[in-house]
Length: 112
Image (cartoon, rainbow, N blue to C red; front, top):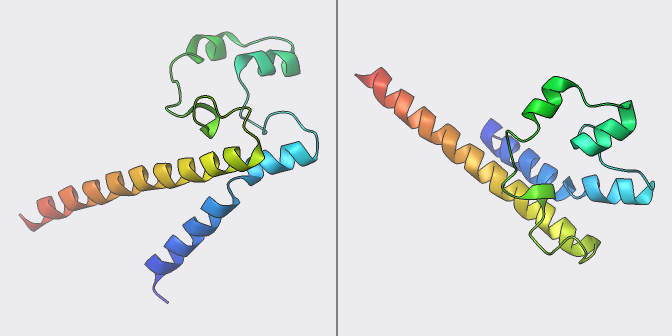
């Protein structure tokens, strides 16, 4: 089997498994996934917000916050799982297109 096909199969498996980020915390009655904390959660965990983190916290806002569509937060685990899968597909597609585009540009430059 070609390496590229193995890569796409692996990515498909990760896409299907992406809702585990919702299911496992729900099952174990845990809070947010490790490392996906906002400044409010971080302050609750550590007791304060470091200056650098506070300054940079509003630098980037995710295009699909919490990997879900607006208004889907209360629709249940099935809808949120579908949104996670859609977010994974969208992110992988955009990343792949950017990589293929850069590869195409670089391959044109190396021919000249």
